[in-house]
Image 1: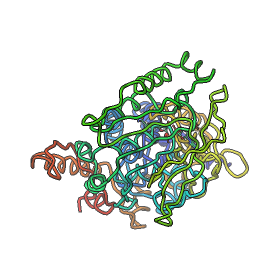
Image 2: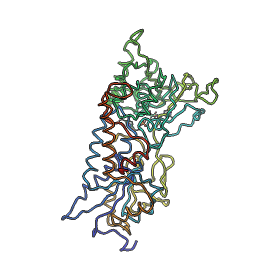
Image 3: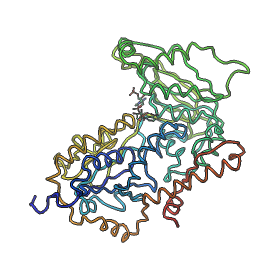
Image 4: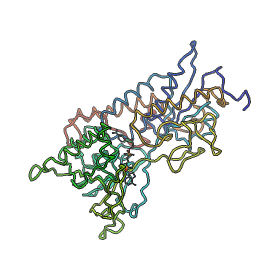
Length: 481
Ligand code: NAP
């Protein structure tokens, strides 16, 4: 690398971050704060690119609408972007509107924080039948993601949800809740209308290991019992604890709390007669999915699901017993984890669903770091961990970027205007932070209007926000058109 091609401290470091979910915003915040302003000079200038017209990634399009606790995180992210020292460009699709080459021309460093939005695959017979869905796709639908169809087929009375993580609980809770009880949230109208028509009576959640090996968390578990007119049903034969389970219960408070909650629910008397709820949420353990069964009366459609009964092997893992159990269901949702998507021009680890990287330094085909290219969040370490964990990730990635600072290949067109010109020349209808504030205000106004009219859909309820779903509408409101 020639001396002229290396970024020097004569001008602010120009950094592009791709993805404005928590990972991207935390990285931007840490970088801005760690560099700050020295001797009155701004040291770093960051542009945050987002594929959707609105910011916040997973917070807007991955968190269940009935999780208001998450609002605290939105407020924190809003504060960072509202300071005015980080520019936001929404509705810019990396790989279509801008390439890695474009970014390398305009920035000294590029950080990918694109997360993971696809469902991990489950290769069992019947997975392609009609009525077999990815949990992440369903999450995108109920969160009003602009790029998924507006209608979701909710025709099943009995539903299986595979997986024992928080996404499985989100999916099962939304599927089993009465739609009217979700109206208080920001769910879009098409989602309310879809859920309102659902004939569901029973949602079955299946974990392949035992109650002490669940991946969900205590608050999310307890929340299941707060749904009106939904009974929780558990099965004594699923309550198996091996040595590793006992150890986990002894040493891990979260596991202990969840096992206690589940055991208390198990011994509670079932509601009967008039007390019985009209919907049930069943929690099954030690069930490993084997095959999704076709409905003989509706060829091509899900009619049931077959599991192998599992037993714990002493280490907390499960092994098959050779006993098979069939359940009649008309829909199956797999919630067995997310998976990252490859990004054009970058090496992808197909097994883990992440960009090939070493602690956040993105690696090239030769296994060596690509100068000036970094990753953070789920696209760096895979789709595990709560939102707060991405802060640690960002710290590590930014640490490496700063360590590399004097060897970064300098941008040839680093001016802040050059990238705006590029987007405009390409006819990209990008949105800005001011534009997001306009769309945000519009969504809040829709909520206020519904509240002033006494509610919506004939239900008297106060609505804080109503999400705008179609991309064109989001863009035109943001751009004040
Ligand atoms: P996850 O926590 O990794 O859970 C995946 C579940 O799928 C596990 O129970 C796993 O079982 C099971 N599984 C994997 N492969 C399977 C297979 N072939 N057959 C049957 N079961 C299989 O993933 P997630 O639920 O997608 O959540 C991703 C992350 O987002 C997690 O960190 C989660 O806590 C977080 N999240 C948090 C919230 C919240 O805080 N409210 C909401 C949503 C998501 P094994 O354990 O046996 O592998």
